[in-house]
Length: 130
Image (cartoon, rainbow, N blue to C red; front, side, top):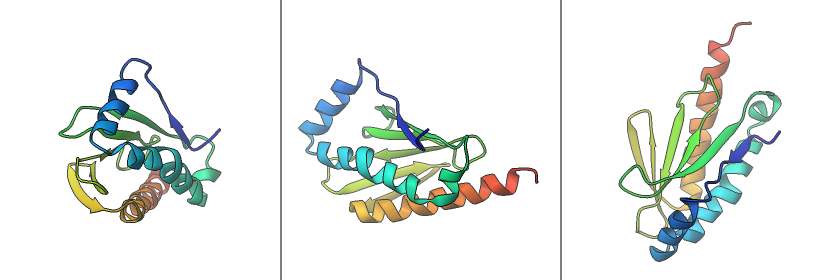
């Protein structure tokens, strides 16, 4: 089983992707969805060694901007991470646990998500019985 699984929706995903193409954010979205997230999750060794540790992603229009919603495995904190794609090229808005972070550049997004995932894994390990 892979550590990141994207759950597609044949009804809403085409509209989501068309909107991102119209706002010139589609390539950033594809880079995050197909490269950054799978590689980042795979690179965190403790995450890949746990059998029931799978992150799922879906496209959402719930917030101010279109977002890639990441659902964390049970026991992780934060449980949900939203990566929004505002119209400004290269900008990302990460929302989790009532906090919002605006980041510029995919590298900064990757660093921020790495911190969230490592802290989430530590939270999960602290909560599990030994």
